[in-house]
Image (cartoon, rainbow over all chains, first blue to last red; front, side, top):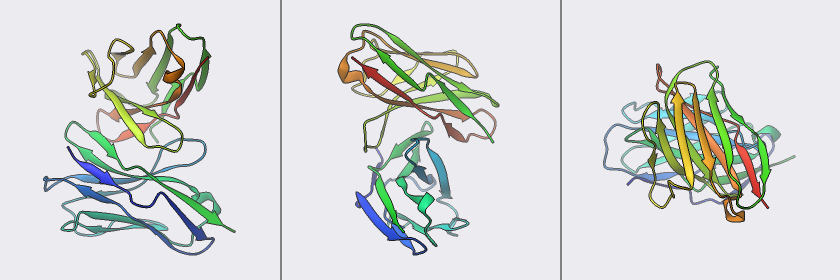
Length: 113
Length: 115
């Protein structure tokens, strides 16, 4: 079974600064999807960004971008110009066969003003 | 955008009773819905996958007789926690897969407290 590892239980960033959240995964597949989800205090899961493994280009959504290193099985999320509203728990996820999402343990991001 | 609702958002029940949680896709058809359980500050744990018109597939370690899942239509799946006990208290989240696009969308979750 695929596994997703987020090694940073908590991270802090100063408002307007940049922060990178780490994620590694394990798979023997060559084509797959990876996601970053945000879960704010409301606990509603929000899709932040998606990456298709066969695409070499790193996905970008406004202030959010990923560094996808397929050979290293690494999928980090960079948040630029951090805002107070970015404070949340962030989950890295892998979409496995059967469309099941395998989630990492999560990283709590705190944004300091 | 695609919306998934859950009802109720918060429920308190007495030990030994059953409680039903509904998950609805409001503006799309979902052939597959997923049920997750989440403890505070922890990750989402997949409990089961429900497919419209067929029996749910449960993950290892999840009691199918305790967590009854029914996916009666393309827009509704229900999770019934039978004979609930305090250890069943948790946050339950559903997600629905759009039949057309294949995208998954999450509901807002249901907080269950068993007293």
